[in-house]
Image (cartoon, rainbow, N blue to C red):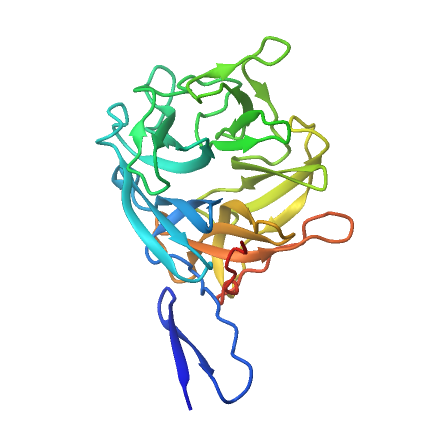
Length: 330
């Protein structure tokens, strides 16, 4: 009897998934959670070609977050690590941490937006842009300075998400300190384009917003998502709103991701993966293991995200097993 043994790396243990060819149907293979080995947070998930990519923050003390790794997979189960795709040596103005990557492809170039330094009035830092010819980099600084350095509408210039609207326009949602702005990006992502009223920044802060904005469209509805609570505490969570346009108003629908005292705490700062050609969605997020007390130690996880018949997002269940193997269909 031929048996296939698969070892999936968990955080504190190994999960063995076994299938035996002559004893009935093979068992489903799951990713396990955390899906990535090591301390990683703020994961941005995207599909490039026939591979899934996760770009996370290296989750450590602020002054040690000076580089970024990426991970790629063909099936959501087996992940390849791509080390140091960007670091502060390539971004001369980034003197301290780099975190919260936001990624997108345009043409034959790959862009990585990031937060750097701890920006207050008069300091250099904020949101930068890097570019590469391949998803795994190496990425190089596009501008030699931040794309957004100033504090507008009291929004800290961090946690950027790049959104391509259905009409081909590119917008960036960003903001910490409980405020969120949206800006319109120019064709090569080197600057901002004014809105029709001449303004460069529009505030779109919903009730309860703290940081970590994310946007996607499904069935003509714009789903705007964000993180609430304190990133170091157990109350960190994800909420969302629905609108018929990318600027809102965004009225909170509810909380859809939060801690489970039997699984993990501090679940938040997420992104959403839609499987190409399918109405299947996954939430990629970070959380803190129950036994972990260091606020900087967070792990990246993936769980299924589903919708009710009314289009509302159902609460996401935190799991240890993660998600099933799901190759991208040609």
